[in-house]
Amino acid sequence: MAIDLSFENKRKPRKGRVLISDPFSKDDYFGRSVVYMCDHNSEGTFGFVLTNYLDIDLSEVAKNFPDVGANISVGGPVQTENIFFIHTLGDQLPGSVEVDDGIYIGGDYDLLTQQLNEGTANSTQVRFFLGYSGWDPGQLEEEINRNNWIVAPVLNSQEIMDTSVTDIWQRFMKREGKKYDILSRAPLDFNDN
Image (cartoon, rainbow, N blue to C red; front, side):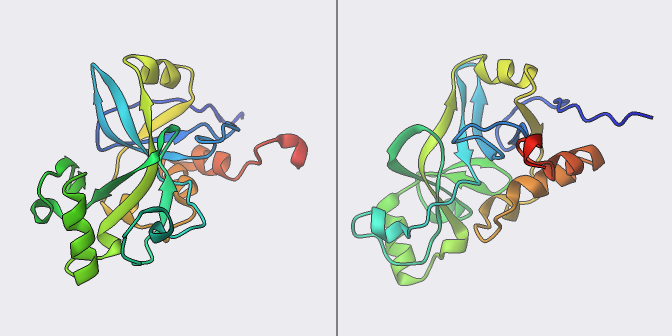
């Protein structure tokens, strides 16, 4: 009996879900990555890669930013000179917009730095990115149809917010079922076996 190891999508993209990349993609930004979709509509899609951590502290990149030990990720190939953030602070940070299920994007950056300095917010409530990932209208659907991505639900905000987790891609793959767990353990190149 043959095992079906195809990598195909059964869900539709929407904000608040994640994209899990094809296990054999060698793309610099998206190889073995998980992207949190912050918006998906007729104008396109944007989100942040959760897996590409930088080996620097945010205070080294952002002028006058408090040293809170916050991990920062490369969110994607667009506007990599800009800092973006998602958070669970909600109304505590005016100007933020809810993505889904208690995760928000943006808001008053100066107030956020003040809250981090004062300790009324902490780095576990905020996740920072340099740049973002974006798709033009229809582009993501084409990539999904080519089996570059599968769409998966987010079960709780900690799956997105916890920057101490380094095996995010493997965890999401495993959660999709046995064949995806097998694929998550396969080498990028079978010649490396």
